[in-house]
Image (cartoon, helix red, strand yellow):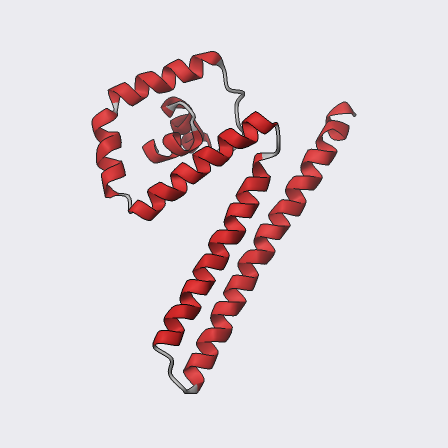
Length: 151
């Protein structure tokens, strides 16, 4: 829950409340949220450091990228889902390419390697479809939301 609070830039109490209620609805951020988050950061500093020390460095890089993209989206006034879609697409492609490079190094000339290649390509394709569906639904929701709220 501490990690969730850090990643979402939400007060720790709100994260705990959401986990109990099962609600994913975001509350509007207020000026008091920043002060509350600052207070939690000071109070849980040792736990934050211990948790970040246990997280792989590649994940820390992704967390920082997510934070930078969120700030860019906020400053530009654009939809945060766009940067998530772009990051997800590139991360998926990088994982697929890494798998292919590893397979080339340990290439076996038998049927199991062909099956593995097909399985990984299908998984890559399935994730891209999910990312694009998320993008389409998000675009539809953001374009239809004002009309739905007006009714």
